[in-house]
Image 1 (tube, rainbow, N blue to C red):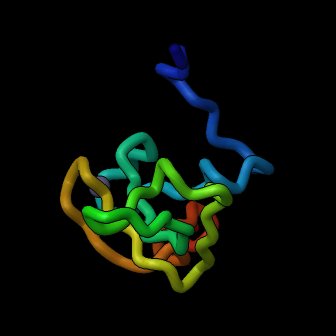
Image 2: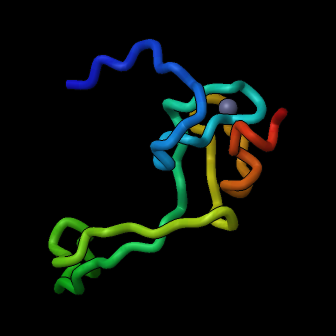
Length: 83
Ligand SMILES: [Zn+2]
């Protein structure tokens, strides 16, 4: 569906894509530990049933690069902090 093989990294105004791995420099395998709503179900919880599917995270949120395994905080994955 997405055809973003080469994504220009400039002054990123799209905050959701502003993180890149400080180790391998990739930005397409970044997982962020965000705060989300989940619906209680008889089996536990289900994120897809929640009415509010917004997700919140900030500079202190845990971030993992699934390409190389680097783990840190979101602020450590900001390109601006690498300069
Ligand atoms: Zn990485």
